[in-house]
Length: 358
Image (tube, rainbow, N blue to C red; front, side):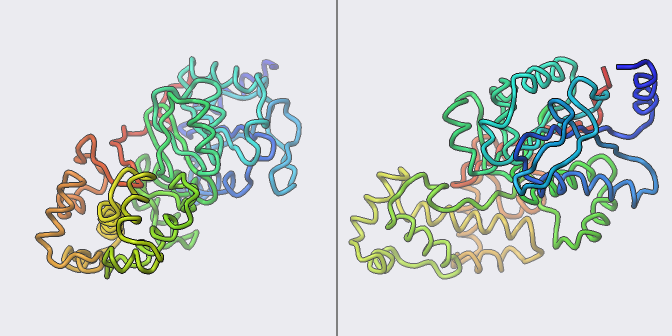
C-alpha cells in the first residue's frame, strides 16, 4: 500500500464516521447487501453529515457476480482494504463453495485486531468456518441453518431475524439487514433518525431482535410427516378460536391417540402444549408490535380470560404480559424463558462503530 493511500486512510478514519466493510462472496445476495447499505446512506442524508462510510471488498479486488448475475465492482481487495470499524460477510447461494482460505485468514486477523465482525444472509457460515462463532449465538438464513449446526456444533443458531452482540453482528437474508441496521442506527443516533429512515423506505415498522424469520414448516419442524405439518398449519391458522384436539384429529383423519403420538415422537411434546406455545408466541408478537390492550390480545389468541392468559404467559415465558409490554428490549426476560419454535436469549448491547481502530 502506498504512503499516500495510508495517509488517506488515516484522514478518513480520523473523522467521526463509522466505517463499515462488506466482504462480497461469490454468488452473494444483492438484496441483502442493498438492505444493509441503504440505511447507512439515508442516515447520512437525513443527518446532513457523514455518520457512516462503507467499502466493498472482494478477495482479489476483481468484480464479483451476485446470485442474480449482476457483476459488482468492489472498492478494494483484501490486501489493500482500508482500516474499518466493522466488516460484514455478505453471503448468498452455495456458500460452502463461495469462500477462500485467504478470506478466512483475513477475518481471523481482523478479529485479533478488535474489528467487529458479522455475517449477512448466509455470511455467518463463513464466520463459523473461521471458528469465529464458537460458543456464540447467531442468526443465519434458514436454508443454511441445518448445515451450519451440523458442521459447527459449538455455534448456537437461533431463529431471530438478526443477532447483535458486542463483537458479532449476524443476520438472516432478504430485507432483514435493513432492520438490523435501523436498530444499530437507533442505538447510536436515536429513535428519531431511525424512524425517519423507516419512513423514507415506506416501512410499516422497524422489526427488532425478538422478531423471527418465517421458516417453511417442513424445515422448521425438521420432519417429513405430512400429517404433522398439516396439524401445525391448522393450529397456526386457528389461533383466535383454537380447534379442540378431537376435532383436529378428525380433520386429519386420524385418532386423537395417533395425533398425540405424532407430536410426542417428532416434537417431544403434546399437541395441546405445542398449540399453547403457538398462541403465546402470537400474543407476544401482538404485545410488542401493536397497541392492543392486554384483554384484546388475550381474546385474539384464544384465551377465555385475562387472568388465565397472564398465568399461562408467566408460566411459559417467565414474565407477565404487562411486564413484556413494558420491557421491549427484553432486558428483564429471565434466562431459560422457553417458547417453541422461538429461542429468545438475552443479548448484550452492540458496539457497532465504537471499537477503536487498531
